[in-house]
Image (cartoon, rainbow, N blue to C red):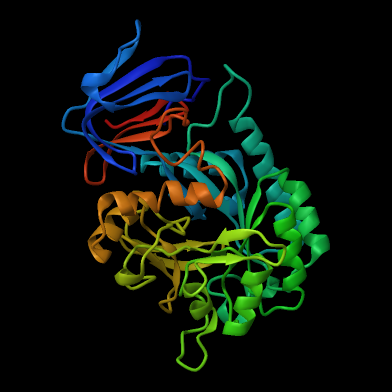
Length: 402
């Protein structure tokens, strides 16, 4: 198990590596970290080394920002829906070791009472993770908030969500969820064709909560209306959505023609498209990045039985016995390399889709998502390709390979 973190006090100089900020590439660069923040990023020859700094020579390695995953359900057999400290510690530690330093915990559709109880536990866990200076913290990736994926989904596009719990949105329910989450409710996925969604979207956006369109059979007109009302995100775009048709473009057509829009109270906003870059959920030519990591991700290939049913795990996907996708088995770092491989984009462009773009969705792009002076010192050192050598969070080393 990775060591439990304490408030950052050490000064580190990471030098000699190739640095992807991700805005630029610095060959033979250096990153100076002090009191949890980045104080210098640039050529190694230009840095002034403070007295007492711990120097890490990283020639031949690569430094990237810590990855940010806005959609995951678990790892290594543990689930967000368990809501226990032990489960959250284990799944967040797994993602940390894979290079992800910040996450949103994604829920499954469930009863109202169970979701209130889960959100309360997640809020308590997050508070314990970020306790005052010098106190012990969780060994895993930082829990930045919650992505409520359901229960406001279309039964026709439920995927592996239990249809028993699917229902139209309720402002009263949403208020209970918001209160239980204590500020952690960051994204809510809903199907815009359900009754009451227009009011729910406005209510959520007024409270700073991102609305995502997903698990939906919406028409083009319904999706356009939801975007105009304030929806600015899409959950695993193309998957669990009405298929594009030349006479009815559906939600996909609405999303692809609304990358930038103005909502009904005059605010400019981007519409962000989330996709799963595992080569199964979406054709490689259409990729932007998240994992939608299954609780079974990170386990050896084989057949598994859980409280949610039976599943088959391969090296990069999880399916039900009848072949339905049930989340991916890849890490976010793998998704970055998949994006580069499948879509032919640069590594810097693919990296931005897993760092600064998700930070923008959360409104944290002035503190997280890139290696720049004044930013939080969350970074990952790669030995090669998918080999994570070291992870630093908030200016302290919290994982070393081997």
